[in-house]
Structures are given as C-alpha cells and as structure tokens.
Amino acid sequence: MPQQPDSIILNANVLTMDSAGPTGQAVAVAGDRILAVGSNDEIRSLAGPDTREIDGQGMTLLPGFIDSHIHLLSLARTTQELDCRPDRASSVAAIAHRVFEWARIVPPGEWVRCYGYDHLALDESRHPTRHDLDVISPRHPVRLDHRSGHAVVLNSLGLQLAGINADTPDPVEGVIERDESGEPTGVLLEMAGYLAQRVDWGRSRNKMAQGVTAANRLLLSYGITSLQDAGPENGPERWQAFRDLIDAETLQARVTMMAGAGRVHELSALPGDDWLRQGHAKIVLTMSTGALHPSLEEFSELAAQACQAGFPVAVHCVEEETVLAAAQVIAGLPKLSVPHRIEHCSECPPETLAAVQSSGAMVVTQPGLVHWNGPGYRKNVSADLQPHLYPIGALASAGIGVVFSSDSPVTNPNPWPAIYSAVTRKDHQSQEFPRDANKVGVADALRMYTLSGAESEGTQTEKGSIAPGKLADLVLVDADPLAIDPEGLKDIKAKMTMIGGKRVWEGR
Image 1 (cartoon, rainbow, N blue to C red):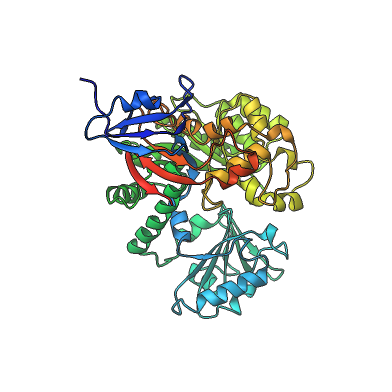
Image 2: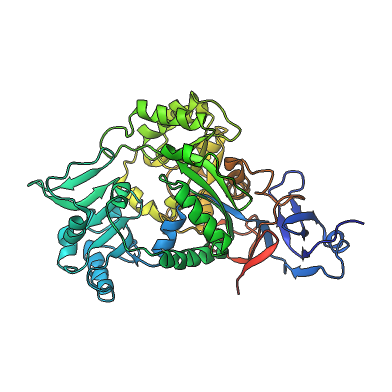
C-alpha cells in the first residue's frame, strides 16, 4: 500500500526550485520528508483518513530560506540590547541620548550594551568616543558595537575593566585608536576576540536562552528554516550550546556551525545530524591594521591545515585586497566534496572577479547591505568602486556560485528586502545603485537564498528545493514573487513556516 501523508498542502502556487518540476499546486508530507509534489487532485488522492489538510489559499509555497552566513548568538544578544542603528540614532548626540535613557534602567556597575551604529551614516561621519559616552554614563561601563561587528567603542570605565590604557600595545589582529597624546579614544578595531578573553559581560545562561528564544521566533517569522553560524571562534563549547538549545527546542531552525580555523582538530570527531552539523573552517582576513592579517603566509598555512583536517574554508573578505588574496590561496587548495567559499566579497572589480572565478570558490554575500547601507555607500565610497560593490549579477554571469545571507545582526535577517535589492539594485530609499549588470532575476535570487545555500554546505540532496524525499522545510508567503511588480518584493510576508513537516510558525 502506498504511504499515506501526515499532511497535505493544497491550493498553493508551489515554486519548487527543482528543475525537474519547477511548479505545482500541492505538496504531500510524510514524517519529516516531502512525499510528493503535484496537482491538487494528485495530492488529494494520496490522503488517508488521518491526513491533515492545509489550505494554501492561493499563496506561494517556497523551500524554507537558508541564511548561509549569520551570527546567531549575536543576533540573540541584540534582542536584549540598545538599538543604535542609523534609523534610530542619526548622530553621535542621538546615540548618547539613547545610552543615557537606557542606562537609567540598568543597575549601576552593570554593562550597558548597545549595537548597530554606523559611523559613516552619522551626521558627524565619525565614530563616537569614550568622551561622548563618559558624560552621560559615569556609573556604567558602556560597550557600543558597530553594525559591521568589526569595531567597538568603550567608555572610560569600560576601557578600565578591559585593562586598556595608554600603555597597552595594539594586539596583533587589531587597533586601539589613540588621540594625539597617545590615550585611547575608546574606538577599538577588530578586537572583539581580544575583549571576549578579558571581560565578563555578565551574560548568564538564562539570558542567552531568552535571547535565542526571541531570535528563533524572528527567524521563523521570516521563513528561515536553516542557518549557517559563521562565528570565527566556534569550538566545542559553542557546538554544545547549540546542541542544548536545539534539544530544548529553544532553537528550531537547522544549524550548520562553522569552525574557528584554529580549532578544527577539536571539532573533527563531533557527530552531526539533520539539526546540527559541521560546516566550513572560518578564516577572517582583513586590512584593518593597514596590512593583510593574517599575513599571506599565515593565511595559507591556516587554510592548508583546515583542508588536511577535512574542512573546506570560508574566508571573510571585504576589501578588494583580501578578496584577491583569498581567491589566490583557494585556487591552490585541494578540492573537497564541499566547495570553498569567499564570504562577503564586498569590493570586487573585474580583475578581482576574474581571480574569484579562477579559484572555483562560491561567494556567500549579502545584498541586504546594499538595501540598508546604499545611502552611506554613495556618500563614502569612491565613485569608481561603487559599481563593483556586491556585484551579484557580474559574479553570477561569470559562472560563480552565488549564495545569499544576512550576516545578521549586521543586517536584519528578513530575506525579502535583500531579494528586492538583488533584483532592482535599489536601496531602502528606492535609490538605484550603480551598474544594472549587477541585477539578477527574481528566480535566480530565490535560488540563491534556498538551493544555492544548501549547495554551499553540501546538503543539496536533503534540502533547498521542494522535491520528493527532501526534508519538509517550507514557507508559505502572501504573494507570488515571480508575478508581482519588483517594487513589492521587499514587502512580502511569510504566513506559515514548516520545519521537518511541523508547523513551527503562523502569521496572521
């Protein structure tokens, strides 16, 4: 007797991302897998007396979104911190005022944590300093995180608790910004890891769980069913934290955890499953100190060691110089069953793009940064470079595998504004960014947020499309992205999210 489905979704516009059957009207689910895709009549004929029926009401059913580069615990933390993003605080004075108001409800001596400022978007076009924060928060240590995650501002009490003063040398990987007298200004570049080893931020296990609960609900409300955590320091303790959160169902999305490149040997023996699995070895390559860090030789050695341990590499690259260095090193690495990756690929003019093409790497990038940061890019990035920022269309035209992600909490994890910007090359002010060649079609953009994400982690036989045998990770949305005016893409909303055949979120 044919297997009967546990549930069927009828009357839907099914966009499968599966070239063998790109559309349908209905889907049957048995256990945690897709049983069949077809017409309403075909799927209804499979139902038994206990099969649950879900009416899709003519809405569009897609594979669950895969956010292929996210920092989950950082996103969770922001649900409990002060939001200082440009739309909330457009000047240094506005940030100071928000910190002052927030500090009034925080007990004296406890850290005031803030996130999301962008110095390029502020009226003053500069970072806040300890002097801006000291006058309004003398009894609280204050930490203000840049939206990129690559800069932090501490007030004087925060610097004291971190052990940073005029005599503190710059760490190898970072920069302590100083004034003309040599005193720290409070601005610290590429020093998050340094601070994590030296400061107790007062984050209890209970607080972390509360934050993950909020982040989990946010991700499900956007139809995100899988994520790849890109923490550069991830090790066994982070793996266990994810395992505990998943087992408690505090976190319901599937997790692929990257490994800190220096920690791959600690993680090589840990068993994974459909809910938690190991991903790439994460290497952060920057030019923040004015030179390549780590050096080309050190970077090459890290990458080679990761490959020897069986891990493909995922290299954080923003600046053109880092993208080029990553492409050159990856070209010489052994090819593993899962492709190596370049993360972000923010600055990529034609000669650099050619090197990326030759490397064979996939590019995991963030069109949401064009959406949210477009005005700042137009103001602060040279006109010659602007056409080559996040050049998604050019990358795809060169045959490079392109994957979408949010880098949340750097940007909001909602996929639809990012898809809108990938298709229109417009920012949140509806201003078009240079170079039409960097636009992609809607179907391509959807694929980059679904099946391409699975390909980037080697799980394309399990998820990323709606096909028999694959995991029943699905999202029902309120508009057909292939049919509406592209201006409406950014406003599409999820109405139901399903993971492993279970409805885990429903909207109004």
